[in-house]
Image (cartoon, rainbow, N blue to C red):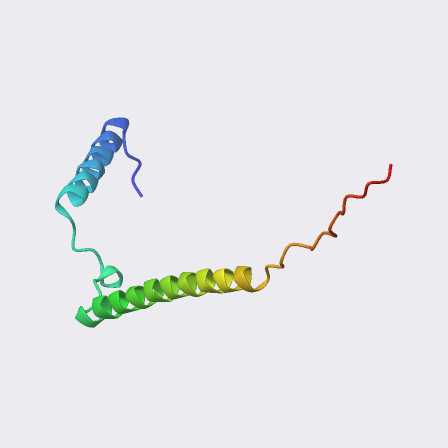
Length: 90
């Protein structure tokens, strides 16, 4: 491998930086491992996301109903206090 001079290293780095900026600005093809999923992949992802949201909402509703029903059935009536009668004795 050939040793590069400082000027050549700067040119290589400048070219690499230009390619990187160009890839960010204009996009790049990438390799096969970064390919987009097919049309069914997006559909499956959206369906799973919707099911998870529905499950979370249902759990919140069930917990709220359970808390409301437990709070209404566990109330105890206030304790009866004995009646105080006034007597004429001192």
